Length: 200
Image (cartoon, rainbow, N blue to C red; front, side):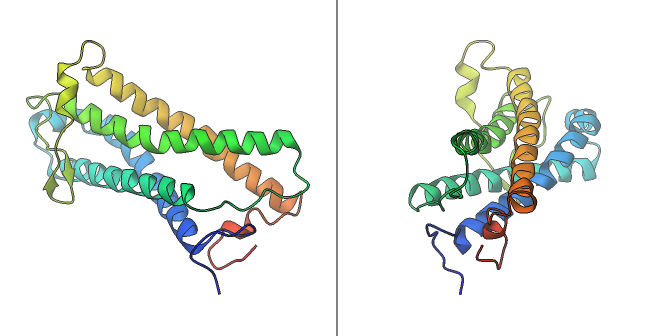
């Protein structure tokens, strides 16, 4: 039976559930975000496209869920042991894996927070759609307006949000390739022990 908590040889069900929930949400958010950035600027200003506005609000909602899951993942990881790296892993692979994971954890927070910040500073006249969480209006990060340029500008947080897309895409690709390399070439249990229902 799969344990809730992590062990020295396997990820527990909580860590697996948070990992895959986060992965699925990001996989949906990124293409939606790219599409909205191209299609919805005029709808944001005029408010004349109800479908685009609904998708914008849905994007906000999923962003807050991602932020919550990121916090839960960080808390769970800090309060649980992590499975040991395969015994045959050379030091450079272990160091690279730790660096990649640490950077991904940073992006987990910067990604949704930069989106929240961008929506908070764009200005109500240009952005009539409220920051939304499944029908509940969320509080904008109003303190950003009191900061000096460029920290009170939409362009800064939009660019950070965009850079997170690209940096995250590169790192996730490396993460997936490393898991496949371990599974098919090195024949370790790195991939299996993160798959639902598998012990590794």
